[in-house]
Amino acid sequence: MKKILSLSIIASLLFAFSACRDESLNPLPGWDPGVHAFTVFDGINFNGNILARPQPYEVANAKNFTKASQNTSKVDLKTRWVSLDNKLTVSKIEIYVRVLESYNDPDGNPKVADLSENGKGKLIATISTPAANRQWNSFSISAQQVYEAYKNASVAYDKVNKVNVFNNPARPRPAGAWFRPAETTGYGSVGADSFVVTWVLTTSDGQVFNTWNPDSICADPTPVSEANSNCQLTFTVR
Image (cartoon, rainbow, N blue to C red; front, side, top):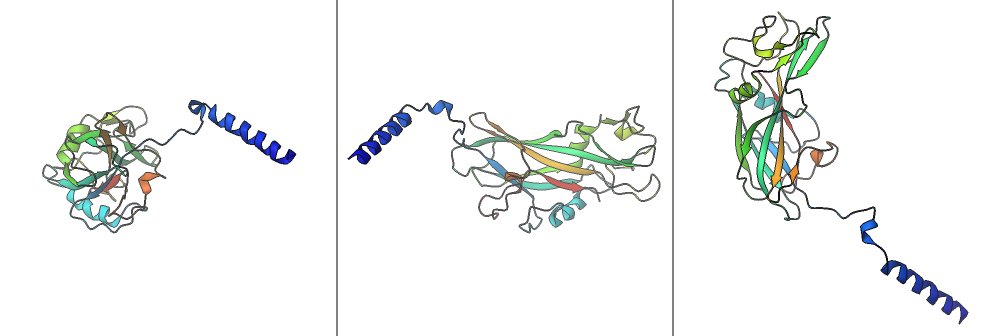
């Protein structure tokens, strides 16, 4: 009887403690709903593996930004947003592009300049009325759009004085082109101008979902037919 009485008292105390617990003090809050996106180059075969960069389909698509005639060059893409629990709806998708220029500093060291200067890029396109959950939205990025966004960009190539990127007498841009392919002579061995495409999702209730930890949803290997996701695409000039 003493053992039964002791167990009853302990059980009563545990129940009382549980009933009086303040959930607002719980250090582990519940999960909120979220959305993510998956973007690919339209018309280029996707091989299903997003964990390595650059992907073969990314490299193949770089031919659409050619050395010459960039006023007609464009890259076709498609994106879709995903809500796993169907609790949020994306009302806007913003497309940003970073431009990375390779050059050699005065000491001959290879450098890469982020022309956006903010690590985020510049807004290039907006999908103002996205299709429903997991449905594709097609869009294009043209060399003309990127140039217009970056035409005033400047870089201190000599580490001191900033010079307009597209009016640099020390390294004139090719005739009929704004962006450069890889070079091995003349200015020296440098890589091609490259472009990093990212996206920002806004939901109908005003939440904004930007790129976060690349080791999480940005590299989710879930099959493309389910909830595949990524956070950026990269291509270059050919």
